[in-house]
Image (tube, rainbow, N blue to C red; front, side, top):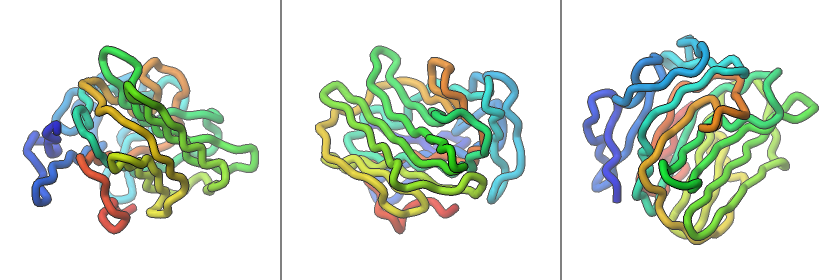
Length: 214
């Protein structure tokens, strides 16, 4: 199991034998103790509890040269974000991928014609891939949300504000070392319009009551 390091100082955040990493997006230079590659002109702005980073929807993004979930057989990936109206219909706003290969995990917003959005999540490993396309669970644009992608060793599932939307079983091999992009897919398409305030990576499947508050 990969050791997941804590926020700015790179220290373990322990909960029993569990290690996690919490990234607070409060500057453009360093996230979770890792230097960033800045694309375009994202802005540091006020968030729901502290600062956040705002992405304009056309050319703004951040790339962090680490995959906190490398080696994890089970995991939880959480994000606190505020999607805006007026963005692309498909926005790949959180993307983890290996350096050598296309194994990856993605969180995407899908905007609808009636001014709402829904969550689309995807995992691809060496042995299988799966999409959870939650078009039956639409949400208003504008408020802050917490999305969680969870894999418990057998089942992939995702939540919005603590509510389970979709789930499906899949075989899985852990992702290897790689990168994370925020606000855009790693190949610089499907740009996101909105804010992101924090990300959390945990090497186990969290229960709902353990999720970050919005």
